[in-house]
Amino acid sequence: MAKYPFLSEEWVTQARLIYTQAEAAQALARDVTLVPVRVNLLVTDVPFPDCSALDAHVDTSSGRVAIDTGHLPEPDVTVSLDYATARALFVSGDVQAALQAFLAGRIKVDGDLTKLLDPRSGVWPAAGRAGPPANPASQPGLGSVAPQGLDVAARLQEITE
Image (cartoon, rainbow, N blue to C red; front, side, top):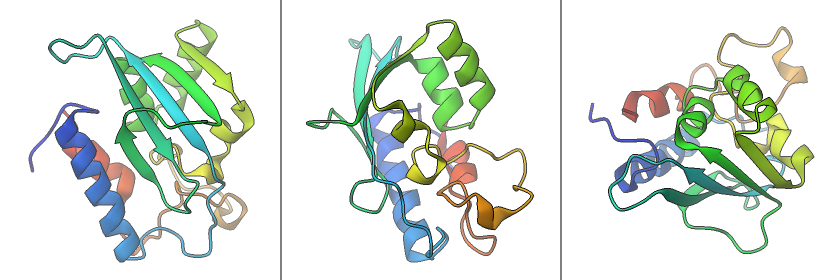
């Protein structure tokens, strides 16, 4: 399987395809309503030529996860973070690394932090991959991928350099 740098044009295209396939296969829990959130990302220290920062966004306000480059008008929250931290959080689901980065001031948040952190928002597909919750029904969200369906977080990891 081809691998792409996180947030490159090719990676974003493949990530969109993964979410579309997961929705078509009903891998994403059907009885879960995503909490709508519009998140703009300012990712610094990107490894792309002629680019020191990248604008991207995640939007669940339509009831599905939309990821793309560029910023949304009127976001609920804007998050500024470095490339390595963004990759650790969005691809690996390394919440501990994100928490450490936040406490160290490497993640800056402007806007509604509660919407950003709500696990039902679908913003963090890989979060919680260490194991299933003791009572899955008590913790719905995009991180709850139906066992018979596609594992979105694992597929994102597969396509990421």
